[in-house]
Image (cartoon, rainbow, N blue to C red; front, top):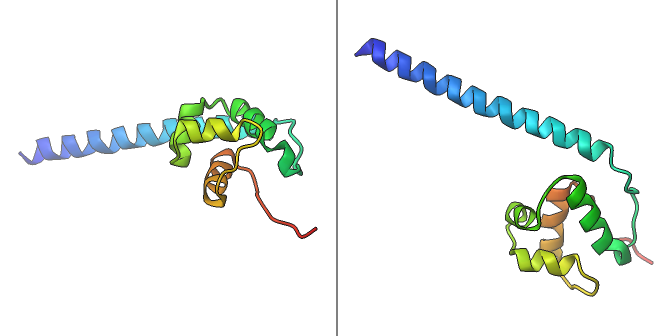
Length: 108
């Protein structure tokens, strides 16, 4: 009994370690992709749709994947990629967090 429990425990630890190693590799690849991005660091809000599309594609994310990561609907995100969308600040911050974009408000 004890031997079986120890074997199961080792298999569980190995499975967890393997899954973590795979996630770390995926994040490292994503980090390199983001680092190679040609997008400028400073952009006007007028350019938001183009920035969102370019960054999402550079990160290899589909619209449904990005929406899920940001905890919003795919339709809400699609609207943000189109001109004239009016997302809430909370929604915009969630999307920026997924895309690793900084968002700030500056007085005119």
